[in-house]
Amino acid sequence: KILTVDYITVTNHHDSYSPKHRGIVTAPNQPDFLARRNGNSSQTYNPYTYSQSVPYNAVEHDHGSNFNTSNGLFTAPVDGTYLFQGSIYSTTASSGGWAQAWLTINGARGSYTDVAGNGMDHTNIISTTHMVTLSAGDTVGYHPYGQNANFGFYQNVHHTYFKGRLLGLSLIH
Figure 1 (spheres, rainbow, N blue to C red):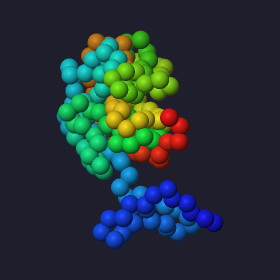
Figure 2 (figure 1 turned 60 degrees about the vertical axis):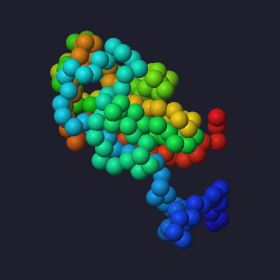
Figure 3 (figure 1 turned 45 degrees about the vertical axis):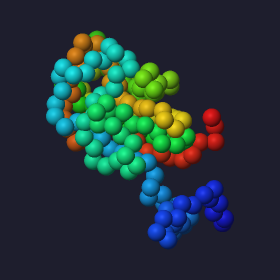
Figure 4 (figure 1 turned 30 degrees about the horizontal axis):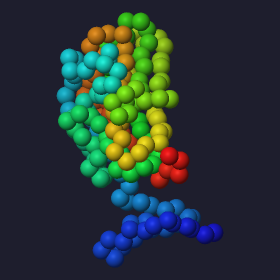
């Protein structure tokens, strides 16, 4: 088997890409983050503003410092394919019996990122996973939606978070 790598970054005489057992390659400097809420929210988030993202205001880790806790947005440092997962534990039941969530990309509702649920007539959790191709400088946030004017959510390490990771450089752009 042959391992082909387009580039290797050498720092302090150590390869940042290093082959491991059975052909696994690790990339310890890969952009990666896990954000959460520090405190419950009931009035600061309006789901009717489609471009607004949840203000995740604390991070567990942020390799590359690409997540902004002031606005809840991740900024892509390089062109590539990224994986995101968002989850919200809502304090507000959706009066119409459904809830949705999508990514906001560059301040707009992200194409091909909507996920909808049915039968959510009580306090609920909505979790979604998205894989998207981004350009360097693109911003990404998480937007849950319900039919209530104020969409509140609980601080909860099991159900209220937003995380993402660069999977690899994109060949399509």
